[in-house]
Length: 130
Image 1: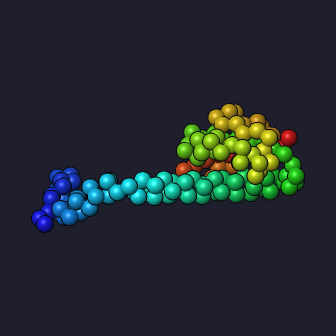
Image 2 (image 1 turned 180 degrees about the horizontal axis):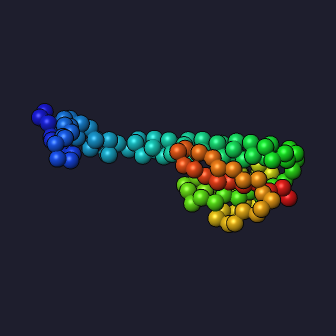
Image 3 (image 1 turned 90 degrees about the vertical axis):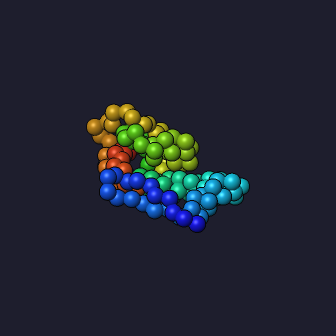
């Protein structure tokens, strides 16, 4: 049970116990670890989608749209959120009454635009009443 030194820069060091390294190897072989991680990723993605829908609904309200107004949705940053929104486009459009979702396109001048901080990333989204 000795320690392993891991160099970090010139003068700092990090010490890991051998049992920590052995535990890491045991986790790699654990058949329950991968499903647990996949479940966590799904929960994180679901949370991000809920946050995106909430932001879009806030924009609809701020723009003065009626609850029944259909919209076009735009997203301009190349982020993981955009990829997630594209993968879940049907659900996203259904929940926000968006007839179209466009990524990386020029936002029309009459669209309501807003920048958001979502999960530490700045995202610019816009909604346009149809």
